[in-house]
Length: 244
Ligand code: FPP
Image (cartoon, rainbow, N blue to C red; front, side, top):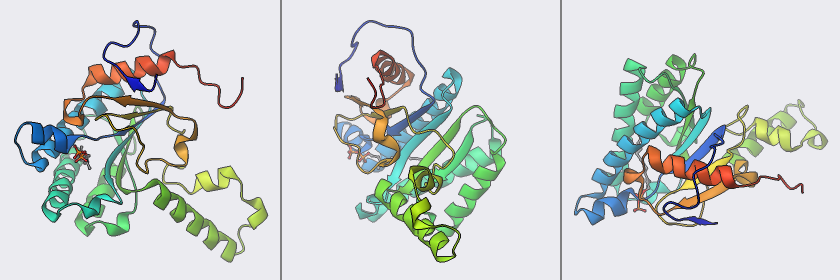
């Protein structure tokens, strides 16, 4: 099944994926349906995000990667970009000050394009949460999957230039070692709510064997029950990784 219907199939034993990626989409449509400004959609989207982080931690997910701001999202009106960055600022201040959720936080994406105060808050959040070992949440901010590969290739190029690496030594592992997610398993499951059927430059390298689940729910409405439904669908699939 490609598109998930409500109540699809019988409930069954859940196989909890070690790594889940989510393309948090539909905030704008959610707000429009209620006659609210788009930024209100992002505010409610941020609340849904916090709830999903806690739930993922509670059910034993080890890595959760959340697509919060893409390299293409800068094309949006300035006040919408500003509102997402302000949500991020407030969220970062909150998590670094309280650390109450015991979630390890990591940021993936190109930090050079972000405001210096946000980069400083990201570093602080990463440092202060480094000892938590249940769930790691990767927030993809100014992230693009192709951009990530270009970044990795540049880093590999520098190693070759320095004489630390030979072109013939490069294999898939070398490239993986230079991705923002180095050292983490690839996502087992990628969820896109909001009814769109594409992955929009999310984890381009890492998603080669991910199970994709598309759901007809807008992100601010996405809750633990929806994550359960996606995991049930994932649990029904038989992953062969190219074997038989
Ligand atoms: C896509 O919906 C959503 C985004 C581009 C932003 C996602 C951001 C959040 C959920 C909040 C992030 C907050 C923190 C703290 C990281 P859309 O605006 O494209 O929706 P549409 O397709 O209905 O217009």
